[in-house]
Length: 151
Image (cartoon, rainbow, N blue to C red; front, side, top):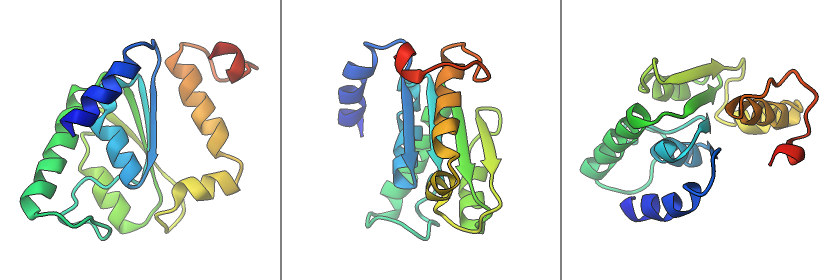
């Protein structure tokens, strides 16, 4: 992951505001690279792949190292980190592994791993992303601001 970290860093350092956004293992990556961001939105991240029901094939040692790297990155990060899960027990357990003082965790009344899809179906995903982006720029989300005008 160090190669990816360096590659991503070459691009993110050019910008004042960087949003990392991901779902499931993409959410895991957004947490892993959170020190390169100003904001993170992670939907149902997989933190402990040794106990995850959806896990890649790797040794227990590799999976444990990934968890250590995720936790170290989150602790190091200065980003505003937002984790969103449903009520599915597995996702709640994974989110509880993250440091409470570094992560804002929102739980939706949905017993599924597909929280981002649910939010999109409710027309709530785009407003959520816009709010996080505006807040990271110091702009109140309550103002009528076109995102395209501030990018």
